Length: 460
Ligand code: HEM
Image (cartoon, rainbow, N blue to C red; front, side, top):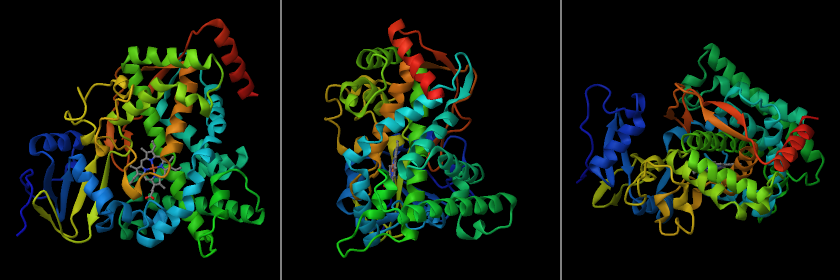
């Protein structure tokens, strides 16, 4: 007999559809507080089970991952991502993961630090003291340029080409449109026509780069070179279509999430001047005006703690979801095949069992081994188990490099009355962007002169 976990009572007509409502994050959190480690609700025909305990999450992601496939939303995005790492399953996924892994090894990722700080400096050279900018848009632009360059190592003209193709697509393909079921995608509406045109353009650009790179077999130091060169045990390599799928996955997965992590970090720092002051003190002391390098990360523990704490409160991936393949039992409840499981970072990262004063921004909680006491799935911004984010090291380094570079030179102030609202779609975007006033920092004249010179040379 199916014994269902507790949950909200079904409501008339559309059942419980929190994602269609005004404030789904608060609704989910309230349900977790009310019903505990596991709750159930029905959204029209969909049966949804939320797992809100580290052990339950581990049992799905680590102990028995084969019984769960990516959820419907991810499956629906295959029209765009194809069989890339995010969307593929089974043996095919495993092979691709093995082949892609070397491209994300520590040494390879470390070699991208200078690209990250270089692009951050270029962006800062365009910032004027006192002006107001949408920091989310700035971070999207920056992380896109970084991922395009690290993937393709193309000259800046081509970086612009790929970026503008992707931007055009993103303008029209909001998260929701990328995920609409197959039939909707072929509708002759102006926006869907634009989306299809955007995908075609992006594909042509990417295939063009792949073709040129295949013709010239040398390692250009980028991710694409690695993906082209790797061979499976049987000697086979990735086809152009596989490369296309992986590359488009990295382009999208690799820039939006990081832009979001950085945007929320600036938002939180603006609300917490004390933490901001400690960050400034650390970057000024350790870097003394020079650009950060990969080897500096160890000496920047507060910077890292700020980023970790920001991803706790505003996890760019706010939940993971899976569809159950065969019936299984958890905590004495039978979960049927076809049900949807949701494991939410938004909920777990706010659980008072693991985080003292969970709503407070306290970077210090991560210092001096503070995270060592946590169960593995109390904090999981990059997921976990075999499907853990392949770009986690890349993302963490990028965030440290960019935060340190910007914090050395500028402080960002909240614009009064600008509403900053997290929207839980594919990622946790700020609904109206994050408008902030840019203030050039007054640091000691010695450091200041070096920074001005760096900005000057980036402008030239
Ligand atoms: C702050 C930045 C990032 C966050 C928060 C993030 C988060 C995640 C999460 C939670 C997953 C697991 C999804 C699941 O289990 O359903 C994931 C998977 C993935 N991420 Fe990231 N990610 C970030 C940056 C990146 C970057 C920089 C790249 C690549 C350049 C990347 C590429 C991927 C790929 C390819 C997967 C699928 C891996 C697989 O299933 O084998 N991500 N990411």
